Amino acid sequence: MKDQILKIKENAEKDVSNAKSLQELNDVRVKYLGKKGELTAVLRGMGSVAPEERPIIGGFVNEARDIIENKIELKEKELKEKALNEKLQKEKIDITMPSKKTKIGSIHPITGVIDNVKEIFLGLGYEIADGPEIEKTYYVFDQLNTPIDHPARDLQDTFYINDNIVLRSQTSSVQIRVMETQKPPIKIICPGAVYRSDSVDPTHSPVFHQFEGLVIDKNITMSDLKGTLEIFAKKCLGEGTQIRFRPHHFPYTEPSAEVDVSCFVCKGKGCRVCKNQGWIELLGCGMVHPKVLENCGIDSNIYSGFAFGCGLERIAMAKYGIDDMRLLYENDVRFLKQF
Figure: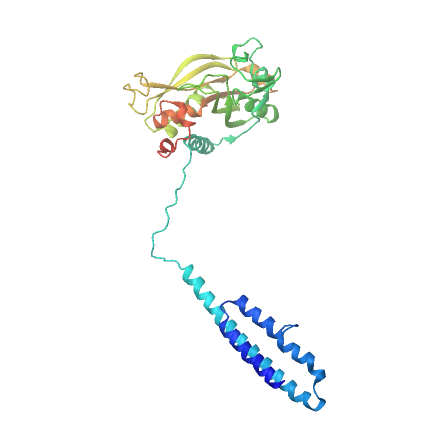
């Protein structure tokens, strides 16, 4: 039996030495030292050995086990170190190599204009107001002194969901909601998306962005409106920008006006951007109609106010010299990366 133990030890040492991976080494461990391993089988056969020889044979088995376990431990350490070196070599990074170029996006021109407008009016003490885009006709038309037979309420101009629900055609509905829930003084702007039944062309889109402003307080006059819009035009389009008022009519303001700004490209001399007029139409404005104030529970004998509204795409087009609104929505990176 001694010779058998020596043979098992020699074979185990040979197999340990030939193992090329941790899995192969584990197979060797199981083969010789496992519950059904060759060396374990010798111990189980001790019953056939003479009692006086059992301690001697047991000593040989334990000695062989210790030698095999030591060999396996050393081989395992060697294989792990080898595997680690191979992994480090495979995953080696040359820190002197140029990094991959990362493409960084930029703010969309419309978003940039919205942020710019907010910054300007927050600096003037205004608050930002918001409201639903799917709105009741009560807020879009009725409270704004727009009668049932007004052209703006036609199907050709407004997206109706049903007789009483529409996609808002202007953010003026937000102004009504604020006036109904907040007592003067009120000083807000309300930017957001609006919807009108327009055909797509270089200057029109059925979906566009708008911001409107509203100030309600005691002794508010047209001069306050003009001064506010002059500051806005200069801050948004350049310090040399001039504005002019043209009489107009809106059912929710009286008096009302259209506001033009001097062309920032040609400085009023006339060019392609301003169609050789020297001026670019920018927004509509006026003093809040007394009936609108009364509709919202505000005493028009005590309070007055002004309101104005402007398409944000129009500002972007004026600011960046864009002559086709569709460019803002086509998501052509060649166009957008200019901004």
